Image 1 (tube, rainbow, N blue to C red):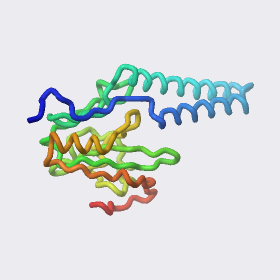
Image 2 (image 1 turned 90 degrees about the vertical axis):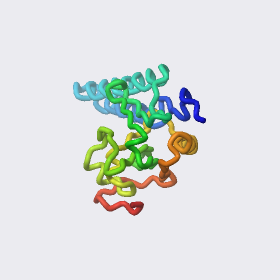
Image 3 (image 1 turned 60 degrees about the horizontal axis):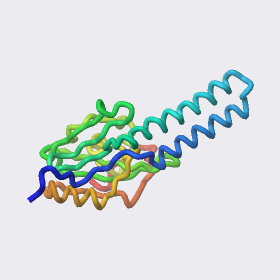
Image 4 (image 1 turned 45 degrees about the vertical axis):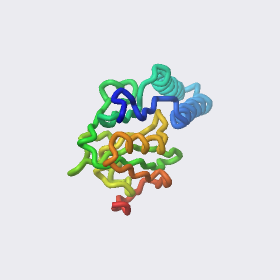
Length: 198
């Protein structure tokens, strides 16, 4: 018998390596702008903008980490995706198990970064989850069904343990399979292609 008050799996926000990479890249760009053209108004504006962007990014995700905001939660009712800072509450979404036929874990390489996603498949089309990935990007993620990509969330800002997530889904929703494609991280396809996985 499952303890109804238990939460089998949750991942909380942290300042991820991707966030640190973006902060560092922004600081470097700001420093270069000031060094190359710091005496010009444009150089000052670009440099200040880059510094402000890195500070804002670090503050937003740092606050989410310090306050223990949940990025992903799996319980007996369904799956909850935490919203992005600073719109955490407004962008938080929940999907009940009755609306989910499969859970996908997959990765995509975007330039220097690799992003991990959690996607949901509905019974007759996409799961009831607002689409946050642009339609043109959905078509470029070729190794996952398009309806799953449309109902996906990036795990940027929190870390997902695939084994723990699979165990949690098996515990609370044993009829829902978890398709783990995280062994590969293909680049986005410049020309949209059909999925080779179905």
